Image 1 (cartoon, rainbow, N blue to C red):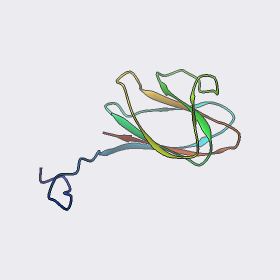
Image 2: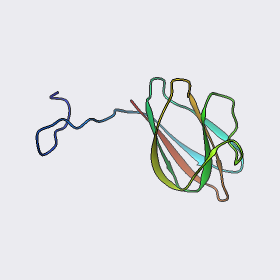
Image 3: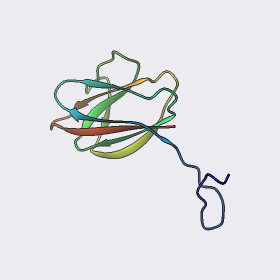
Image 4: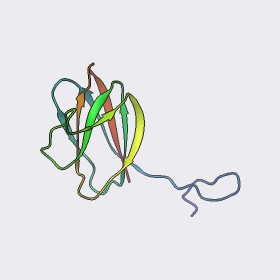
Length: 102
């Protein structure tokens, strides 16, 4: 595919298109963002340790419902039913960036 970048051997390198980017604060109250429809992967970058819940609208992230996300960057594959991401701080306030990848 001529639109794909090539490696040193001339083989296409699969890449994902950047969709919606959400920048938000992470604090003491659970917050929610919508994941771009059709996104198969999201990238999460957080400046603070937090708890994250990926699922449907209306859920609340907490240490008992979400998974622990240490500050840093990671990518996660999504199921079709996962339309929202909720997040809450572990201890310190910070910033989070959620990028939908298609």
